[in-house]
Structure formats: structure tokens, C-alpha cells
Image (cartoon, rainbow over all chains, first blue to last red; front, side):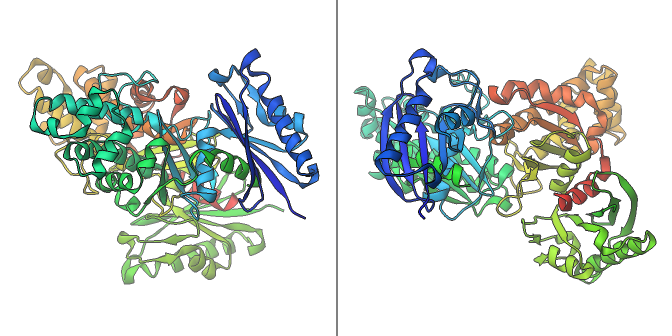
Length: 320
Length: 320
């Protein structure tokens, strides 16, 4: 008898849902809007209804469902208690109990970044590994730590908050978290634009500034992490220097993570990872310089599941 | 029927052994020399004989022994394979199998620093906690990471090598590992002496230098971490500045560890920890500055098991 499980990725505007078999095959995939009104009280009932409707549509009875995993944007402890999800309007709530009560099915909740790491381990860039660190380079830098195949949640759900590793002592700008010099300020999409802007300002008026396509991009308000790595691929020297700075900050940060949990693979995800393998080269070069010798043979891989990492990881949460 | 287990802490000159009940009571404790001749081939047979002799002495039959845990000075994987223990003369060896074969009892091996962390969690400064980081401040800085009550071994046994977190960018001196700017260079007993020496050189000839007892200690070759913290307790301003520097480096390092594994307690052990609670104050002050807000309520405690942490943790390895 075939068994099934559901993976849910709860975002601020959209809920992604997936129907999986226990081997990691996506049998169906769909989305519903995230209704945040009334302090987000409609969100879990909406998700329950979406899952029940899908079960009816596919003639799947409860006995055939292993459970429902869900990744949510906030700190979640090992019992499924979320402490705050400001952008959903939620206060403290036990998601396992509330959604499990609605569905009368086993439910397991986790933090979305951690759950994505589990997804990449199960079916993505980290497949075959059990000690993995996912670095998600998007607007910010998120992360997920997997040790022995399990998410490191941490005492207060802040495990894997690698974007807030302190990396620079004399940073004048504040990070979104209020500190100064967080990894996120240099290795996120926004951080790379900051590095590029600083670089272009420092070489203003020189032949190098005139020759790089990034000067034009800056003038036209189109400077982005993608523009930087596109220029790197064209061999632009200024872009390569910026990429090298980025690689130095991230390589240093990941080397420090390695001295704590010693993973066998780092998976690089998020929007910035669309730049591809070249990213890993810049990171690995500096990682090798800063890493403790016992941690040097870690591999660097690009995430492969994209926006689906969350539903994969959520499904894996209940498969165990 | 009472059950027993043995905890073994294998050091470079001495093997410490303990007989425990499953609740963590030490029933007996003794030592044998570490015989390193013939590539360390006598070490495990000596340990096996010491345990068998103790079982005979106490009339303990094999059926009553849960197992033997052993902490060893080198990287050990989850299967008990040690990859190198240069100062014992050992190459690659599966300790669980070799010692288990000699004793015909279940054996579990772990890295000594990691095992000490488990001991402090079980019966020491971290009792009652399951997400713990031990920072052992001795000649070097060692560490052990406990997540959900289990040691984080890492992919190649380098989990918890927190002494080699990169903390300073422009350090001219090399760390023992070959890198520059490792946490160990500032937070170990040796590191504190380095910080103190630099401080005293920078204030040479000033009234502050004349008034601190550390100037005399330096001149007499008696400058030590203990001398620094003794002077701190006397209210010496220069010593307090050195302690503050130490606290800044270690607080920053521990904050970075928190962004990875988010422990609920940091336990400070090793020779330096004999300075007592004042150490935690200097560390916590700076930790609070560098830690991600979700990690701020971690506690700081002084290790309580001293040199026995290893035998406690080793016994806990087999109790599970």
C-alpha cells in the first residue's frame, strides 16, 4: 500500500504545498495565498482545508498519510512551538498541536531555513550527506545546520542563524538585527551590492571604473549580485575583486562554522546561488585559508531545489 | 540488580579510570600509566587488564556491566575510529572493536574534549541542560558541542574544535595549527599571558605599569593567567583591562558559536576556569554585545568536574 506525506512551506504571501511519496518523489505541487488578516488566524485552517481537498481529489485516506511537515518563518522549538512570527501576526503557538488538531494527522513544524536545509540534504545539492550546512544567500543570509541527518534547532530555535555571525570589527553600517559586522552584511544579495558600491566609489574616475560594466549598472540603478557575477563570468577585473571580497567574508564565516559542527558539505542556496559553480570557487579558495586542518575536505555544492527546498524538507520532517 | 559502567580518560602520560553506577555516582576511581612504547600497542591491553582486575576485585560479572566508554586525544568518528593520535603513536584504529574485542564488552570511544563536554552535561556545570557548549581553556582552547544531549562529532571528528575559530584578522603570530588569529591565541592560558605581555609592553614606563603587580610577575617570569585574574580580584586596573580583552575575544567567539548551534548554556572549563565566576562576567558582557538576539539568554557556568570530566563523560557515552 502506497504511503504519502505532505510538505508545506509557509511564506509571508504564499503557502507552497507538496504531496510526496516516502522516497522523495513530488506527486503534486500547488500554492494558496497566505491570509494574514485577523492576526493570521485563517492561515492554519486554510492549510488544513487545502490538504483535505487534495486528499479528497486524490482519494487518499488518512491511514495512507504519514503526516504533514511545515516550515514556518520564525523560531520553532523541537515540540513545534513557534515563539513569534511577526509578519504572520502570530504570537506563541504550538503548530504541531493546532494544525494536527485540525487535520487529525501527525504534524511536525520547523523553521523555514532549517527545513530547507533538510530538503537539500534529502533530495538536493546535499543528497547522500548527513552532516550539512546550508547557507541561503538571498536578501539576507539564512542557514540550516544538519548534524547526523537531523536539524539543529537550538535551545530557542535560533540554530543556524548564520547570517548573524560577527565577521567584521569596524563596520559602520548596522545590520538589520541591530549589530554591526554580521555575515549577512557582506554575503547576501544586498551585501554584495554594498561591497560593489564601495568598490566602485573607491576607484571612481580611474580607467578600471571606466572599463567595468558595473559603473553603468550603478548609474542606472541596476547594480545587483547577478550583475556582479555576470561581469565575473565575462572576466571583468573589478567584478572579480568584488567576488573575491565576498568569497573572503563567506569563506571565513563558513570556516568558523566548520570548527563548530565540522560538516562534510556546504550547500549554497538562495537567489545569489543562481550564479552557479563560480560562487563555490570563490568561497572554497578562502575557506581553505581559514579552516582548521581537520575540516578542510568539506565539499561546496550549489543548492538544486530552488524554491521547492522548503516543501521537500517539510515532507522529510515527518518521514524522519 | 545493580548495573555498572566504566569511564576511561586516556591521556598522554596517565590513563584515568572510573567505575560508575548509571545515575552518575563514582564508585571507584584510579589511574594507570600510559605506556606509549611499541607505537602505543600496550595501551588498550593495559586498559582492558585494569578493568578486568577491578571487576574481579569488586565481584562484578560481565552481565552487570553496561559497557566501557573511553575518551581519547584525537579525532574519533561515530563508529569509534580514531584517525590519528600522534602522541600515542597510533595510526587509524577502531577503538570500539579493538578494546571491545579484548574485554568482550560494549565499548564506545569519543574525542576527549567532546567527552568532557558530555561529562559536564551529565554531572557537572551543565547539569540539567541538553544543548551545551564546553570551552576548555588550558594550554590551548578545546571544546565540545552537545546538541539534544548528544556529542556533535562532525564528519571527520573535528566537531567542537572551537580553539581554531578565526577571531583576529591581523595577528602576526602563528597559532599552533599554522593559521593566524585563532581563538586559542587569546583565550587559552598561554593566550592570556600573550595579551598581558603585550599590554605591559605598551604601557612600559608609565605609572600604571609601575603600580600593577603584573610588571613584577613578568620580570620574574611568573606572569600567568592565574596571576592576571588574581590581580583582577584585587582590583588592579591593568589586569582588568587584560581580562576585558580576553572576555572580548572569547565572548565574540562564543557568540559566533551560538549563531550556529544556539546552546542554552556555555560551560567554561580547563585550568583558566579556576579563576571562577569573575571569568563568566567578563565573557558574558562581550557575548551580549556580539550575540544574535535569539541567542542572548544563554547562561555561563564554570565547569565543576575538573580533571574528572573525562571519566564522567566516557561513562555517559555508554549509558546513552
